[in-house]
View 1: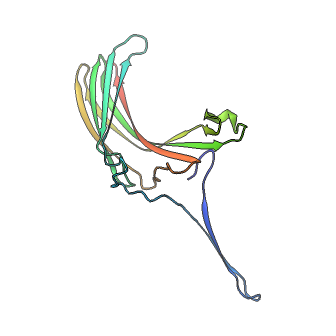
View 2: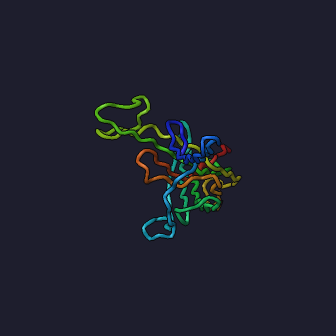
View 3: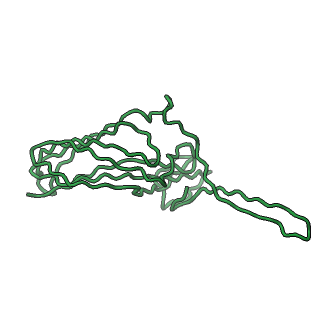
Length: 194
């Protein structure tokens, strides 16, 4: 796991000692360690669907109405190479047309530090308690898809789109007390003033 504020690296170093008249053989290899995670396990919520609803008042100074979005994903657990199917239900009760949607797969990484009476990296602290410091989080885009749509003002519609989990994606990291990594899908709608 690599990041802006730190990293966790594992290496294996091997040395074969040989008689004095021959040179020793040395090799070094980096590797990653991840907890084995069974997505079909009943303990995980990986198979459960997730639905999120949001509404926004459109307009900068004067209100032009409300746009409601309800995003539905049929499961929570994915592996690299899978497609995340997202159904987006729009209710456009504004005077503005929706012309484009963007789906992004984002990775949020948080770094945690522990303290014994003193604060570490105070300028980067996101949240602090008596025993633990949560350093500022980083968010980076893993994948993105865009689709041109036309949802007229005063109407509604459902858009289905898939976003692919990249092959290089590392698993969610929740068992580590130093770094936590989570993934989420972000839906953005683009409006057009008519």
